[in-house]
Length: 412
Image (cartoon, rainbow, N blue to C red):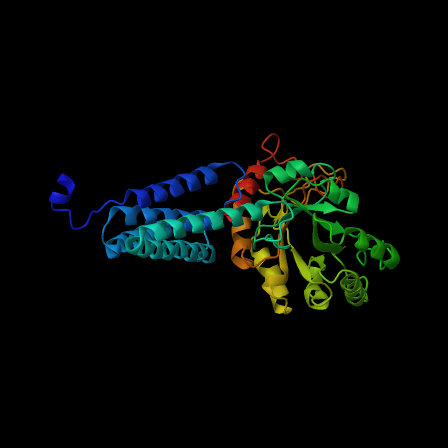
């Protein structure tokens, strides 16, 4: 009674039921987001958190306008801080603003409904929270129809040469595995999918290592598999300069895969370096997805030339390939311990890797890329040593933790 007799009486009129619901929602979202490996992304966190905050304010203040003003003030402060966070991109921040605004408007609508009819307001709040929880649960189930094949933009991370060591890469955040059979798909951990390596062709030799009949049989074995991504890796660094018919042969292989698996997508990785500047233009229409291969760090310059990334992506875009088809190929290897002592490529430091990832994020934003590819998890004696499996801070820089942080931030 003393509260109602005071000067604040015209503003404060507690509705304990509404405030308690809001507090429970806030507590639940904080607990879920704190669970290691939780799939509750930052967009979902913001939507639900602002819904809970709106209900708390609505249960505290009599005036809907005052509650709305306070809530808008909170959202503006939070989103400005998010936009200024290190490594944040404007596109990702605005995506979060939209989800937060959706939560805010929902909370305000519930506030108005609650003040007009507390019973209906309570039922609406419970229904919204229950529906959101149910949708989130369905999305986290393996093979859920609510989880699209391509996943959320920027959330698919592919690495190669891991053999049976993929679980270690998976713990860091890689969720696309390098596989070559249906049996390999069966062995993947829950939450991971496989990219099918169909063996190479039109690189050093102008033929396919796997003939069409064998490929068709393999396609029928993997298509529709719950752990298959639908991506067929059909050629690694094809060379039209060595094999002039490479663009046509690769396009024919893409057409064959489309015939046998209409939902499948073919992927090739293109170098397009100084001596091969025409490759992107020559191969632009040969496959669905195009990997942009550029390793900026080498011993010749004793560091990393980030301008090479801009140059290589520029060639791909100039060839008319849209960003939505381009896959960044990230450098996570050196050649200090290769058996033939090539020692040309240099494993980046943690700071250099941060700069590499930031440059790729600007040129091919996570929101638009089909996935990203990291070369290489496993060691190849003649090509990649140390590889990312070795870059754990023991004898070489700890790039594994850098990738773990990068993937976690991207998935928020």
